[in-house]
Image (cartoon, rainbow, N blue to C red; front, side):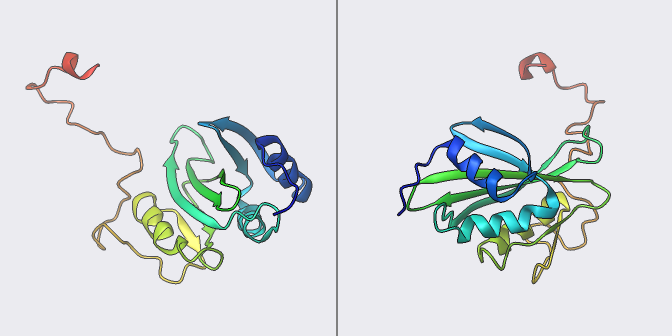
Length: 170
């Protein structure tokens, strides 16, 4: 291991030096650095993070989708969590795509474990992973024509009279 000191500031600086203009925003929540990056560069960044001999973020923990219907042009997001096993450093990467064209590059060739995580994200949010070897539904019915984790449907029937909302914090 090198003399690199892992802190949120040094990791952010190293990424910024390698990929100028890539990072849209950054913050720290739950002691994990979160960076929002341009979708077009997400694949290159993740590959570099894994291959970089200093950072060596060699373990993919999570890929997940998020839906912000009020963010025009950036309604769907993809969150990646990567982890350096030697340094015990974790990084959260986010990128956003429009709901009309929710496509991002697959990272299955970087992390084999991304296969099922990308399929699950596709299944629930409809985000397509370009280059995925078998992008199909994994948990829901094949004939479903919607994506259940999108915030497009009411959670309950508003006409119900048998429920008192006071008991549900509303």
